Length: 293
Image (cartoon, rainbow, N blue to C red):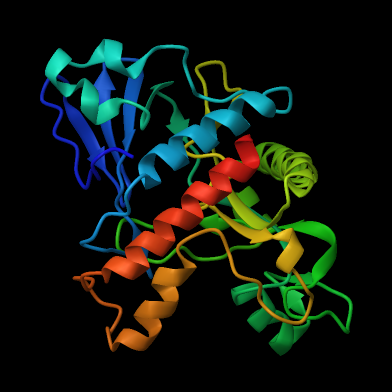
């Protein structure tokens, strides 16, 4: 495994954005280089401790899904080696963890699909027997499979702010009914195809988040990341039982530790203990190994 990368420092290209996990650089006028670092965010705060190998896992898992599901919707990924667009002495910063993509206009919504009743969805169901305004049958269990996957969009918050769940009608008000319908239908198709495949690899995809943009011709394009342990809740199928939350292939170890650490969930985040870092790294690696074989 490579040395953890907390922050990239590519000077041969102009940096245009630094997100919670990704550093983005301009490649000419129409392309971007996205470097996925080993930063980890929890409760919308970036932790000061990187997770070794995390950036490579997210990049390779995304590339796998972008290719596997391209018949449903094209992605922004380009067949250009990241090493070819940076200086020679910067190639180690992009190897295995970067991607060159088309520069697109991102839609101002996140497309969330839930196949199981968990997290905030479970809390909302207990209170109102609905999730994001979608009525559900009585008698569902925590972590139970929903009769059909549901589409629950949210707004895209600025760094450090919280996303806000919105109704489909509110989303249609933001981007138009026709495009909102396409985003919903494509998101559900992506989730169903991915969940079916993942189950054959011993992974349940409980829920996931997609992001989309539009190309110059106005066509819908899949952007950002694809069905990774950061954007999705992955459960080991052999440890699943409705009624209780299964362990997950993601940063749950970190979240659980933070809940008991005394941290007030305000920046800065606390330094993570070595055992939590190691176990989290192992979970990301295991998710990739299961999915990609």
